[in-house]
Amino acid sequence: MLNFDLQIAILRSLVPSYVDEKRLEITSTQFKTEQDSFMFNLQYLKREKLVDISSISNRSNTTTTNFDDAVHLLNIKSDTYTLARCSITHLGIKALSTHLGTKFIRACCD
Image (tube, rainbow, N blue to C red; front, side):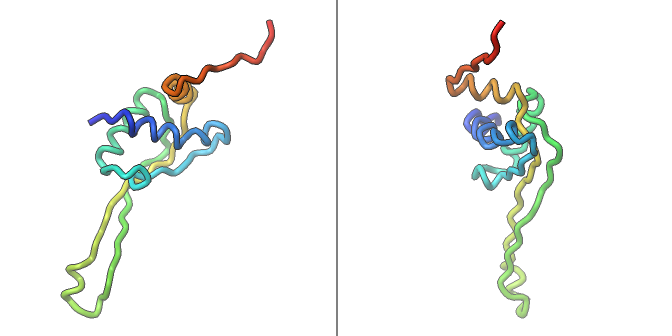
C-alpha cells in the first residue's frame, strides 16, 4: 500500500545526494517499516522518476546465542531488511519542495 509519509521521509533522507551527486544507502529498518511496504513505495518513487535507484538487495541480520547446544539453534533470530542505493532526482527535489512549501529562486538576470 502506498504510504505518503514514508515517501516524504525517503525523499528527505535523499536530499544530500542531490548536492553531492552520490548515491546513498537507505534501509527499511531506517524508516521502521515493513520490508514489502518499503519496496513498494520505493518502486513507486522510481516509477514517478522522483528517485534514481542503482541497486536493491535483501539482507539479513542474524543473531545467535550459543551453538553448543542443539536447543539454542532453534533460538536463532533472523531479521531481513532491504538495502537500496539511490539518489534523488530533480523532479524529486521539486516534489519535496512543493510539499514543504519552499519556492525555487531564479538566480539569473535577463
